[in-house]
Length: 239
Ligand SMILES: [Zn+2]
Figure 1 (cartoon, rainbow, N blue to C red):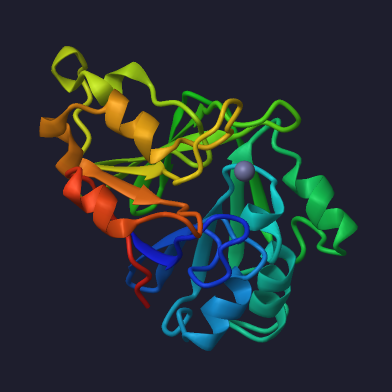
Figure 2: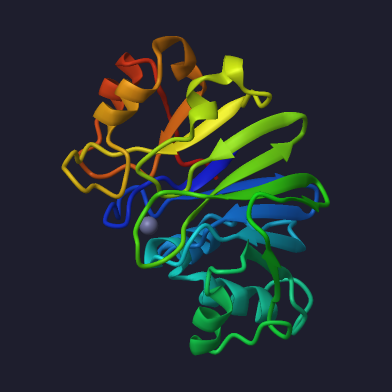
């Protein structure tokens, strides 16, 4: 369903920072734009045919927003109509993305459009519906998961998190049944981990639900085969 420009954790330079996208017509939805994502977008010609870019920001760790300013400047000066914003950036009101962009010299409402959402509220973005939900990640900055409704499919994208909400684990008791669940998963497993280890994911998710769970944000030690043997799917980069 979603495609991935990068599917790795902060330090997984081989897979790139975790970032998903979805294209429809001349529009593109992009989730996060970490430190090495602009480079990958340009090198792989992902913007071909795209005139409107909608960026959803989960949180402001560098592996999620590190090249967003470059991406906005590139779109403003080199892609689309010269000196017209082609990028809209959406985040929850407590995610300090305008401040971060301003430090990078990006002027919101000139170089890009920024929109602040309330969490737990659904918004319409032309071809999809979006809802941000608070996730459990680090104390220093707020972090969000995203529920997406695209093309009759209900998607849950955990962003960075070390836990899962109950309705993902007990879909029979929930009104929402997700078609795809993209989940931050790592091999690293230690007390205080701000990501979700494969061991913990296996404890949380019953075997019959696992085929809908797609591991992403993979660290270097992550063993794809191990996850697949456990019944999970694992995303791959696709351009
Ligand atoms: Zn993070």
